[in-house]
Image 1 (cartoon, rainbow, N blue to C red):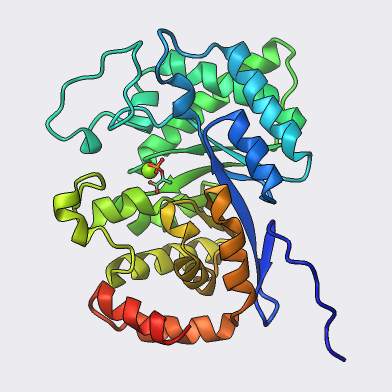
Image 2: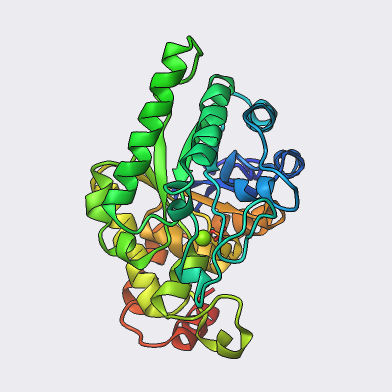
Length: 322
Ligand code: PEP
Ligand code: MG
């Protein structure tokens, strides 16, 4: 018998051969969470919390952040994952309340987890706020820009200290809260096996990963021809990350801009990832594309694509096969 025509749910996309992937949204505010919910997102795959720190004379307090994280959790309800990335300040995101060092290469400098491990009070305030909001939903913590295992361990030690402090104060939090990391620095992508023993999940940040893999500043248009995620080196690395993480029973999401490109999104699905996170207004096109293809076919495409040497070969192959 033929299957009934199910309504197209944007919170999960299903291929013609019944392989499914969760569709989540990237946000940077409570307002963004509301919009994402209205557009059908199944949760938040990336909350870029650094935006809460920009264009203001002082960082957001613990109470202010607690309210924000709780609000986002309540918008989505108990079953939806809400991945809160700890602030990824530095690089092109400079707050007013602290003067960052002048650097020749800010994108290779003081940013992300490197700042957090140096500004421990600022980091702890955020971790306290997330933990305090954790009973209100399925909050998860994610660290940005992890390059080496020592950074992961240092961040986890600080998180453990914050948990101890909350316990001493008798403050409730979800003791089973999952903690993961972005895969956006090449060394972490290549060493994902080391991290897979430690982290609960991964989210691939193609914006930075492409930048660091091809050595191309993501904001510099004069070398923009290189900034292309269809480069087979990028695709191969992403496939290796997904396979290695999955081998260790760790789920993988992808939250860079490529997740919102229906063709790229379906390729990643073919690599076996579990979640895709994108701008909420891209969800329906991605869901539609996924509903029109077969997982097994994507796997065959990947075998062909990963033998190619240039992004444009990959793109023309995909144009001819979709
Ligand atoms: C990324 O690097 O792909 C990512 C999602 O993080 P951001 O764009 O905030 O650097
Ligand atoms: Mg990034």
